[in-house]
Every structure is written in structure tokens, then in C-alpha cells.
Amino acid sequence: MNGGRRADQGNRVSTVLGRRLGGELYKFRMAARKTQQQAAQAISATTTKVTKMESGWVPMRDPDIRVLCEFYGVTDADAVNGLLDLARLDRERRKAKGWWQQMPTVRSFSEYVAMEDVATHIKTWQLALIPGLLQTPDYVRSLGVSSDSWTHPDQIEEMVATRIKRQGRLWGDRPLEFHAVIWEAALRQEIGGRDVMSGQLNHLIDVAGRPNVHVQVLPFRAGAIRSVPSAFNLLSFGEPGAVDVGYSESLGSTVWTEGAEGTEVYARAFDRVARMSLAPRDSVHLIEAISKGMQG
Image (tube, rainbow, N blue to C red; front, side, top):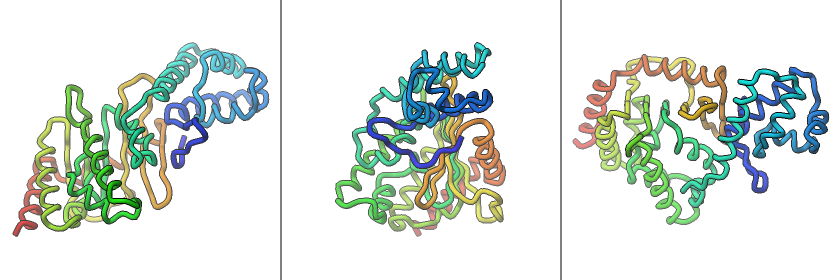
């Protein structure tokens, strides 16, 4: 299923796992040719509740899932157990109190940060900016100053602190596997001036040496970038029942893509730009050359 911008409804939140679970129940209901009203009657609830369940707005109880599966004629025990596992994971995720929930500047994309915090692998394609997990404080600060999303200077420093906190996923005993493909333009755009950008490029070289971080550069000489017009992230998870999630932003909207068919589009696009890009070692050499040019 595709989701739009994350939304809040009172104290209810539409989550990725919740939408995945709701989407599966929706498909089963449609295959059984049942209406939402009939489904509501089966679990002694309102039609509004069924609507919220299918949209991922509310956590689901195991008894409701079992009753609905029986009502829809779902007899495959593995399919039912898979839904129950998804519901359990979703309930646990909703109860988790992550550090990002206390940071005002994160609230607009807290669902993404929550997923990033538990992801095992992330692939990112970036055209205009250095990936957030690889940005230096000065680079983040320069982006904040140029943004119109703050009303007080303290918010910029909070943005910096948040970005650095998120970067903790690259360290520790079980670090995130992070593969970034960056268009050369993002390396040459002098965010914050030459000194800031040179420092950012040197940091990129350092972090690219970590075994869990893979950096590739798509050089200008590679030619046209076919069918990959915008930046995106593809997140993978190690927990059972959690499908890959594609995440992209455009002016005024955020798009989530979940499920095998939807995320396969992101996977193919990422593989395409990765194949067009320089190998990691050659990418570092290009970054070094650009950095030295800025220091001259």
C-alpha cells in the first residue's frame, strides 16, 4: 500500500506496520465480498472502527483478527499467525517511547525516525544533499539557517542535536548497514561555504572507511539519470513480518511505499544508480579531489 504524509488523529497514529496489517485485512475482506458494516457486526464494533483498523490508525486486538479471518474465510494458519505477529509488533512499536518523541523538530517525521531506529539496512539515493546520517554539525547548521522552518535560533541547534543523535545508529555493537549513492552535484554544492563543505567532504571520507558504511558517487560523466528523478530511502528490518519500506519526499508531500511490489521499484532504481556509480574506492578518490579543490 502507499501512504501519504504521516498523520495524527487524537492519540492515534497511523503506523507502517499498522497500515500493512490493515491492508492485509482489507484484501481478505474484499476477496470475501464483505462490507465494512458486515465486518463491524462480526466483531461487535462500529464501521468507523473497521475503517480505522484497515487504515492502520488503531492497534488491533488478537480476538478481533481471529474473528475477522474466520468471517472472511481465511483458513491458512500461517496467514493468520502472520497477521497476529504483525499486530503484536505494531502494538509494541506504538508503546515504545523513543528519544525522538521529546524533540519538537522531529515530530513532523517521527515515524521515519522511529523506523530508522530499528532498521537493519538502509539504502539512500541523494541528488542535492549529503545523506542526513553522514552530515557534520556545521553542514546541518548551514542547512537549518537557510530553511524557513524555524522561528528561533535554538531550533537550529536542536536540529543539529537531533541529526547527531540519529547518527548513533552507525556505531555500536550492531550498527546499521548504510549504503549511500550520492550524485556529484551534492558534493560540489557549497552548503555553508567552502570551509564547511570541505569539512563535510573530509568527514564523508572518514565515515566511508567504516565496514558498515558504503558510499558511492554518481559522477557527472555518467550521463543521464534515467527514471530516478528524486531522492529516496529504502529501509529493511530484521524482525518477522516487517516488510521493506520506501520513503521519499516531494514539495508538500511525503510518500511511503510498502510491500514487495511497491518497494521493488525502489530496489531496482537503487541498483540502477549504484551500477552507474563509481566503486567505493574510486568514489573516495573523487571526494578527496573535490575537497582539495575547495581548500585551494
